[in-house]
Length: 466
Image 1 (cartoon, rainbow, N blue to C red):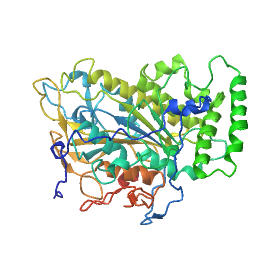
Image 2 (cartoon, rainbow, N blue to C red):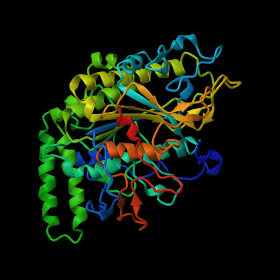
Image 3 (cartoon, rainbow, N blue to C red):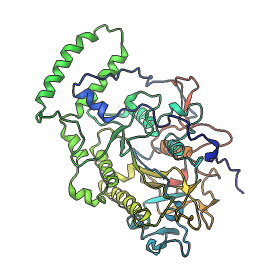
Image 4 (cartoon, rainbow, N blue to C red):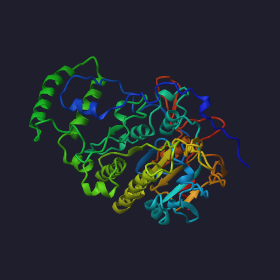
C-alpha cells in the first residue's frame, strides 16, 4: 500500500518569486581580475567560520566515493522515452530500438553507448522518483540545493557542491590548486548561498584552448605578471600590519593566492585543454567537452571533489521526436556520458567517482500532445553510476504508462525526492547528511538535508546492495 502523496505542484508556488539563481558566486572573470592585478574590484567579505558548531545524528555513511559528477538535465527530459521507457505502438519511434536488458526496458537506438554500459552493469536507474514542483526555475533550484527554495532558508541555501566543498576543505593536500567545486557549462545556477565565496562553484565554459585569462596579453613567459605580483605585495603587505580589518584581509589575500597558483601553470593547461581527437571522441559537442574536462580534472588530482555539468534543451513541448529534438540531444547525452564512464573505468577513477544525473521533473505520458510534444509531469528518474554503486538494474517499478510508481523499491517505501538524492550524495562522500550548521545568518540552524515532517529524507542505500 502506498503512503500518501506529498507532491507540491507548480500552482502552489508563484513563478514570479525572485532570486533563486541570483545568489552571489565566484565567477571565473572575478577570479582572474584579481590575479591580473587589475585592482578595480573588491572581493572583501567576511567568511563564516569553517569550524562552525555542528550537530549530527551520527549516522553511518556509505563513504564509497571520493568524487561526484552531478549532471543536471535542465529542461526536464521525458522519462518514458529515455530511462523509464514505455513503448507505445504508433508513438514510440522504431529508431529507438527498444530492448529489455537485464530486465530493464531501454531505448538502445537512442542511447547505444549507455546500452553497452547497461549490459556491463555499470549504472542503475531509480524509477520511483518524484518532483515536488513543475516550474523550471523552482524545480531546478530544488534539485541543486535539496530543499524547497521558497522555504525559510531556501534563499540562502548553498548548492550541494558547496556543502561538499566546505566539508572536504580539510582534506585538501598541499600543492592542490584547483577549486573543490567546479561547474562546467553552468553559467547560471545556485552558488554557495550563505557560505564563504571560497566554497562557491568555479564556473567554466570548456574550450580547446584551455582555461581563459591564465596569462596576461603579450606576456607569454609571465615576466610582467611576476613584476606586478611583486609590486602588489610591496605596496599591500605593509598595510596589513595591525590592520583593523583583520580576518577579512586574509580572505582577500586567499583569493589572490588561489588565482596566482593557476596562472602560467602547465597542470592547468593539461587539465583544461583538449585535442580535436578527444573532442570528436566525446561527440563534438559542448556537453561532451564538459564531460572530457571533468575526467581530466579528476585525473589531475588537484583538489576538485564535486563537478556539476549542465546540459539544457530538454523542454520539448513540441515535436519531441523531430530529428533536432530528442534524437539529437539523446545522442549528445549518450555519447558524452558513456565516453566519460569508459575513460573513468579505464583510468581506475570510476570506483571512486559517483556520477549522478537527473532533470528537474519528467514529462507527460501516453500519446503526445496536439503539438507532438510532452508537457511537465512530476514522475521522473535519477541515474547513478560509479562510487561503488551496483549497476545493471532499476530501483522502483512504474505502472504500464509511467504515470506513477507501483513499487518504490527502497527501504523508505515512498517516492524518492531531490532531498533523498542529496542525502545519497552526502552519504557516498562520507558526509553526515543529518548535520545541522549553526552559523547561518538567520540563526535557525541550517540542516544539510531538511527534516520535513512527515517525510524523513534518507540515502538510497539500495544503490550499494547486490
